[in-house]
Length: 204
Image (cartoon, rainbow, N blue to C red):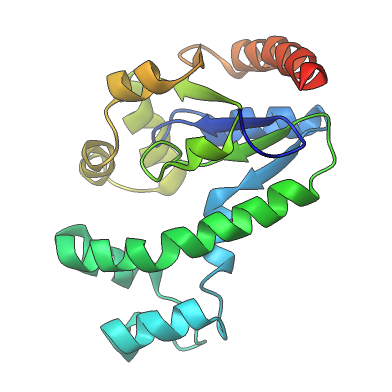
């Protein structure tokens, strides 16, 4: 049980699983979404102390001509460099967590969804009352993500291999939606869970 006054649902899934689409459907039902990816971006905006520390550590090559963090450059640096990745995580994860807590506390819907691709990996599930995983077969993940991101299947496979294994994610989840059919099927599952979460929230 989270320490928030509101009921918090942690929503996660691998790349191309349909996590963001499910999140949009919950939002259409009037639910406030706290998006961990968006929070992570906001925490390294120009002028933030986090971005200053990243520049001091990695050098000015890490920012683009507008002064924004060059994410693709940073990804290249940390992808095969475990110590650089660890340094970055130790800097950012506590900052992101504090901001997530602030935003969850400000939410005013029946319950709140914390949408995070690294919900379990970063222990953000400790901020939630229950968790929902959107799961898809790997072939579907690759197909969707490469089409959406205009990225090679090889690059998507690398990302999938760097993420938590599907089986592990499913084992840690309270609820799972198997997203292997069409969007209407996903919408139907979201609506059923929305009703369930609304009832659970009323009991908190």
